[in-house]
Image (tube, rainbow, N blue to C red; front, side, top):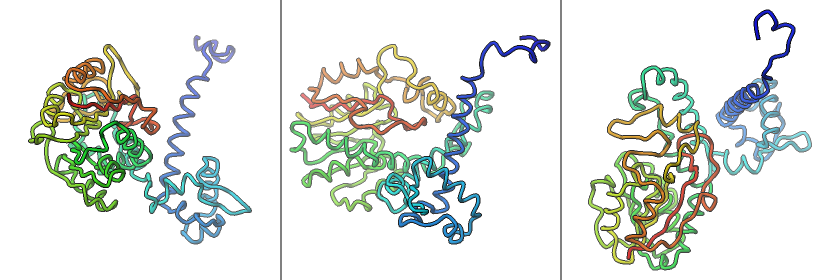
Length: 357
């Protein structure tokens, strides 16, 4: 359309699609900021037994009109309930947004906020290439706690149930959780089996998170060992090995190391976001986030959770079947939480349980 006719003719392309995209982006970001402020203000904690907005404003020293608007939004989003002129924390918010809840998701919100800082540097990355996240200070300390919080919201429990149900797993007496990070999978398995012990092996910098969870859940049969899954001694005659969401965890050489450390009949449990042969993007938005950073010495592929040397799903299964008996192969619908549009999403991961021949 020329400038001359703009005032007389409707646009050839209606703005509906663009405006829907902008509305979803603007509303989502604003709702996120409102939720973070509500957490910081302690609104969900304060309203567990109910209260009036004016009394809450006076108690917290907040502007009553703005607080009233914030609470109205939280009611609309299902995080507060309104009954008899009072506001109450909803069941969902009480479960996930009150700090003393064991399933508190505050770290997830903090981690999402950290990713916003990364996206704020998209123009710089586009001009200069992938950013070094350590030099840029892009990631704070919320990533691993966020993964732990997400895992506790159902995945650790479902995973432990699926693994424990595998024939022969009840006879396992010790499990090695390679790159176990927060340690919650090992803890969940031990909680289901009073005779099971676990060793979490990971880099020393994640020890505080794992040991905090061990203390939190009173895990006396779980220990942490500092180590690198690609170079450290994995031992021999292991009963069982877990390898979940590990960078480089889909490589042939690591499969060989795990096979060698297991006893005959030992059980290997693998969970990763696999790519089928010739598969492209699983999520362009998360792929873009993935491409914006580069860790020194790590050869990343173009799609999220892809690394140089990875086996595709079909090749990984074939390698497993040449050395192991496949006992179970579950898709994400059996264990994973919903995706939230960031690095850490499970996408279409698979949980594979196999027994060494």
